[in-house]
Image (cartoon, rainbow, N blue to C red):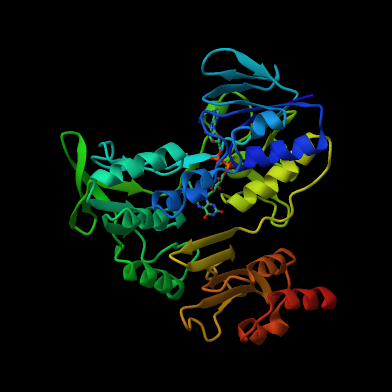
Length: 416
Ligand SMILES: Cc1cc2nc3c(=O)[nH]c(=O)nc-3n(C[C@H](O)[C@H](O)[C@H](O)COP(=O)(O)OP(=O)(O)OC[C@H]3O[C@@H](n4cnc5c(N)ncnc54)[C@H](O)[C@@H]3O)c2cc1C
């Protein structure tokens, strides 16, 4: 049996490890266009900031692959997948054939298109090489602009700030992390950023990037302001790396469409991680979930199923955690209730003492939540959301001091 994995990120590696545990004999090949052993992308901002050493960025060491009988073909790009022939084409010429194929090719940053967006000094952060490029540029720079109200935008702004750059941080929306936080939650995050000296500008995007000699010099904004900049960091979302699948006949949407076994629409092909748009059995919808936790869950399931097992993906609850200068933020499920009958958002007496807690209910059933400052209960709350727990009888308890979501979970299970 030959297992071929495209992508050496968290999703590809986790699947490879799972397969190797279950099948000691099968041949495993991982192909990746990057040169490095698998690393944690989420540790890159701390590495840029000088908060962690380079070697702590890696998930595995160089010799991991050989030790586990995995062939790692680095610096190799797959240019096409041919399901009928059970083979993939490589950029350097040649093919690799497979019995089972996993596509774990992830996503890349969405590019900004405005005048000047092609100048040298406009940067994105996805790879270790890009992180090291930012470190190099940071040494010679004084002024930075970061754009993007999501998780990565704030990380970019923090990294620039920690490099000692004069940092303007632009958010096009009226608050930070707009799909997830309401104004009260955002205010806690904004306070932390401003205390650290980051100049936050809400409802302000980039109109044009000015350059000198092909290099970034300044940014003019949609609010008509102008900020000097030697480096401009863009974090306005990600797009799945689907282009090389053209002509493969695989069904795609925003990602590769896969069922609850993570099987794609052609035989012997699976997908997981950021590139997989997986069937959420609870809602019947296909969802893209771009988080590390998701790569680990899906990597496990893909690995089991590819090696002859049978595991299915449970209902998908979006679950994101970020720590911003020591302030933890967890967002679960639906954070902002739609303006429809039956939905309500409960915040008790929060925000208080720099902490925030919000629960979103639909007809009494917990469908989402936001925790800021103290996120110890996040996993138990995720379980409550997954089991579609009716928490109507427990409303007040959700905000009591010493609230114990695990105990509540047991009680709800018992009552059910
Ligand atoms: C700066 C940063 C901070 C983050 N912070 C957090 C966080 O705090 N919490 C969280 O949950 N998530 C975070 N994330 C998101 C998380 O890192 C991703 O969800 C996760 O890494 C996705 O893993 P993946 O294996 O699906 O894809 P990737 O890690 O993108 O791996 C895909 C691999 O496929 C390779 N590839 C693509 N196309 C081809 C091809 N045609 N041929 C060969 N190889 C190919 C790529 O080189 C890449 O190595 C962060 C991401 C970034 C960039």
